[in-house]
Image (spheres, rainbow, N blue to C red):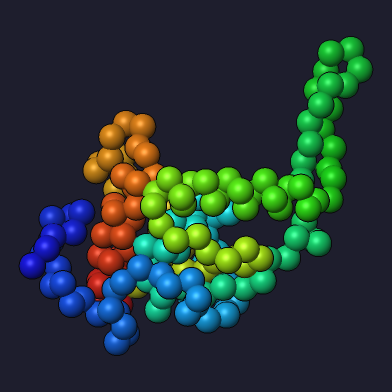
Length: 170
């Protein structure tokens, strides 16, 4: 027996909907759509690390839709003011986002996912919305990691936290 971050005992064979609670095999993730059961992860290293920790059965992917996106840009304006405007999300923006995610995951020591996908996680039974998920995970990191945690320190915390969330009854 092992314990989760809440100190509860978890059988090593904990199963979720018939699948073992292993980490995500990016090549085996099915396509899906965001909705009430599937939530988009944040588009950063922590979000994609959360998808990895959730396990293949609890992850879906959907093609990234950058063409309809825009970014806010700020720069100097007249008289020393700051001016903000909107620009289309560019290929350089996509490259910067992907590289930042890949550096974070590489630091965590986990396999890199393929590019071009938005990652979705299944709604854990005990949570009503994605804000509750991120609040829970941030709380677990604050409780169990150092004050400035390295991604390799965060990965096992997320893995244990996601296993606990998915093991809770509906």
